[in-house]
Image 1 (cartoon, chains in turn blue, brown):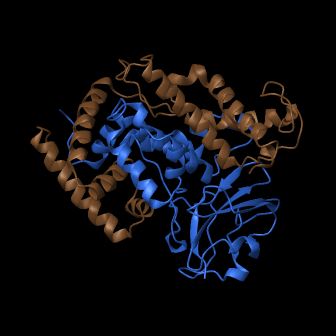
Image 2: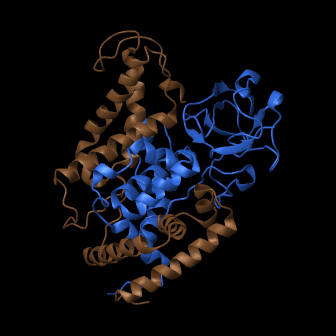
Image 3: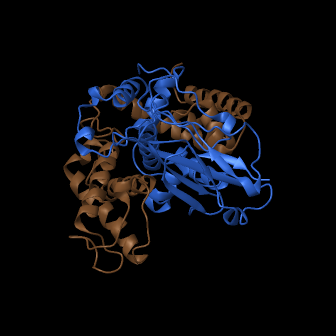
Amino acid sequence: MTMTIEDDAALREAFAARTGPGPGGTGACPVPERIYDAARGALPPGEVREVVEHLAACPECAEAWRLAVALEEEARAGGAVVDPAAARRPWYLQPVRAAAAAAVALVAVAVVWTVVQQPEDAPVWRDAGRLEIRSLLPEGEALPRGEAVLRWTPVPEEDPEGTTYDVLVSTEEDPFPIAEADRLEETSYRIPPDVMEAVPAGGEILWQVEALLADGRTVASPTYKVRIR
Amino acid sequence: MDPTSRTPAGAPPSGPADGPGALPPQDVEALRRQLVAAVRRTCPRWLTADADDLVQTALLRVLEIRRKREGEAEFSAFYLRRAAHSSVVDEIRRRRRRAEVPLEPEDGGEPSRPLESSFAPDPERMSESRELGRAITECLGRMIRPRKMAVALHLQGHRIKEVGGILGWNEKKAENLIYRGLADLRSCLEDKGFER
């Protein structure tokens, strides 16, 4: 045995190399949509924990989780190209894919994941060249119900001309959006007050922005969570 | 929420029945293009030959939902990625249930390696990894729930802050549980004969 259990990378590689369904067979597995929603932080914490506990024992669901994370991560990094020709470029010509392949070689599964989090937890990407959307809401501050305005950074920050933004707003209790806006040219969105009536005082909303760049690429933000007062 | 995924009324060429939820061919084609990209990023290499079928499956699901909602469904890019992911995961499960794919492929099959990755695993190392992986699963099964969840996500490649965010814990708690959980794991693996 040449692998050493002291090495986190070897443990991760082994965890990803597991095969087969978990106890109870595939019939006991969450549906793929639930795994996808859990992996992108769109489920309540209790349900996410159930999925995580399951994938600890189930290689197939752990695999499904990794696929979901990789897909979301690539979309956030600007890899969600609309043009199929661009998607066919060799992996080594795609910076995100090249980085991902290098990470795979090291630890089998090395994906950067950003989850439902408070605005102060906004991730700081090491690669400054990557496209990203960050929340501009004050850290830890609740939004007033009657003036719930979401704000975010433009993308690309140096030249956002031609970029439009779609916004999805939801709650942890309801998987379907309570509000959405399409093709905004500004980097803010005021949630309609009548929508906010459904959110209890002290309740939280989840929000996410997706930018469509002038060159056809899309960039998704992490899912942010903010309290409503 | 890409504009190409918006769905004005029309009729799909190969989707579910015509009706209020149907789409014009150019919109179906736009949906298909996005699903092709998403499936391509999700599909393991051993499913490459079926990538077109997976796209078609995802497309039919999307069109069916639109039809059921009488044309009022709008598909965000998130939704399309999720549909592509579901299509791929369902197919992986189906193949394995029918034993069309060996659980431990002789070629060192790498279940979650995306289509375009050029990573080529060493079969001997893969074999060692699987043995260690089985032991990890057994050890996780003996762990208390919070440590198990923390370690599982750590082994999935998530950072401490991410683990905390996913499980609804603060960073300190996540770090503590990962640290203690990994210690439990290594101790359990050592008992099973694995070397530090």
